[in-house]
Length: 479
Length: 138
Image (cartoon, rainbow over all chains, first blue to last red; front, side, top):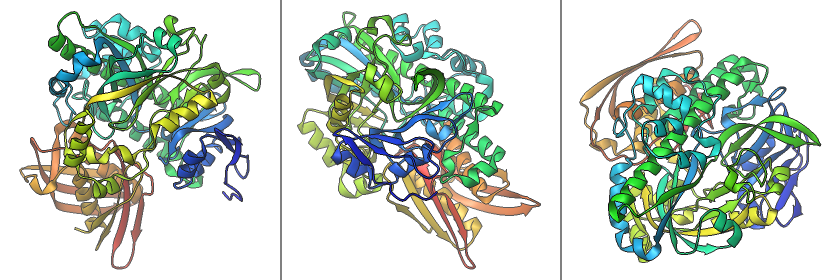
């Protein structure tokens, strides 16, 4: 593929476009300000967005979120709606960590109540939610049970007495996509997942104790049950080895079946199965099963967190799920495209669903406000709560950003900082970090990430996610 | 050992420069475990045999490394050393047989690998050396 000009053209302060050229079937739309765009131009992510625009059956635009950076096949922060009849599905458009996502829990405690006990809470969480290498989960599943988890998702947990119906109500898909087919998830994937339910994983995954620092939108804040000074808990993790192996298995299957497609692709991780091939349906159903595992995983972690808080603060403490969002997933959704209702697989790879008011997929209590969206910052920086919008439905297939977006390699972060120093520096700001390894702290150094404030500002100004609240960290558990 | 870690914004990338294809695969295994743990500390107590077959060398490498990630996730097994590495060709297939020693114990885990990726994956075989490039999603 040859491109004469891949310098994006400015549409307004918050969006850019790369017009259709070469093999592109649709233009590429980038949500960014000048600063974020300049960072994007430093790696291959815009080229990846262009490659996505050439996929069969892509609708409207290939879209990049303000936190976009280079990924595999798709960029991280890439969104594409692909026709479920004439298009395709691409595991690389979802990511290895199927249904990596974020859950927010709100307590009835205030910052002052919790501050003196942060260390105690972190110790307890560290014990109840292991990082999970090898067979260390407290909930080891057998072959029969794991199939049930894959079919029922978070509902399985409630049936077994973990968590409650409200947790399910306040979760994307109510914690279970019914199209999941556990028989399409390999023995190997299940083997990796059996000891990993309720485990955190490593990398950028965490549990963070935070307080609401600032309410930007009072009305929606009230609807979400948030007020200033209140303590909340943000959980960020995914489907663990089970999801990673599922992605890997299907990438290999597609590669074996379509050597001619893969030869023509600019990146092999962009491989896909055409919608008319049963393999596309098989992958979709396997991916749904892995997504269910991830919801069960975050649900279990939420349950363990509630247990830790109840043990420390007594029975009067309430820990309620505000919502749970996926940010690595493909969803079968109906969207109006050029005036016509169409069923598409919306691939969101490092992007969050941002459905606005009135969409039937969101809980009754959020029908007027739009769905809650959580954008975690890097360690030690603010995280944000946003709300979905009508405009997002038109502009980005109901999607917005997902996080800060990495700026610097882990190698470089390790060269620049020392984990112990960083830990002390954060403690100076009243942020306590408990991590499985010191190197894990260094690699997640706040300055290794883009400024999350810019990311949410662009989402808000572009109208694809309204800022509702700003959250500040008090304690972090890192896998 | 002849591998070097390179800059990669989101994940971990390394390049191996070894005398042969077999040595390059062995070094790729060691580099993979250096991401996960301090391999110097891991004892060589538990042997693992790995057998992988594939139509292409690239997928052979992918599947081999993926087997290693599987052992970490399921048994907490970590590599100490590669004792034997053989890669042969049978018709249109490549066959890898490896004997590895390591341990499942209470070692510090620095990073868990989500998956091997095809991103930038390369196998360049020269007259006197083999160069491999691998990116792991972590």
